[in-house]
View 1 (spheres, rainbow, N blue to C red):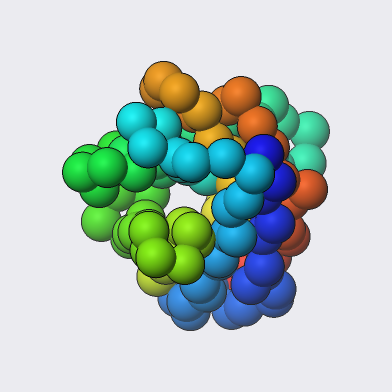
View 2: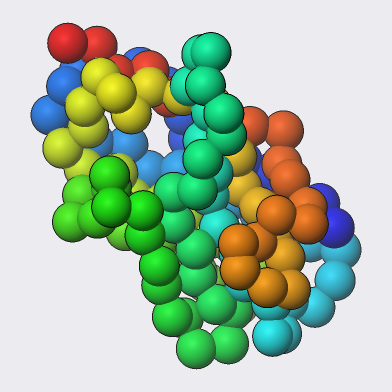
Length: 117
């Protein structure tokens, strides 16, 4: 499985970013894809996940209402729309895939998101 993230960058607090992940290497039927993040000096934490078949989503409470995860089965991509970003959202964001929740069998290389105050 290969997961390649894109879309990170620097944004001011209150701004928006959209992360994308190109997934390849297997059929993702009955799997789920997700996003984790790791801030400096902290453990990696779950952000959001989506089931490939039904598109059922799940979010960490810290991002609920601000982030939206989606998938495009035709293009084999998963995206994370991040709105109303806060400085505490600053982290390296990783695209992940797995057969059960939380999806962490496979990881992308990560993309940096920095939110300035």
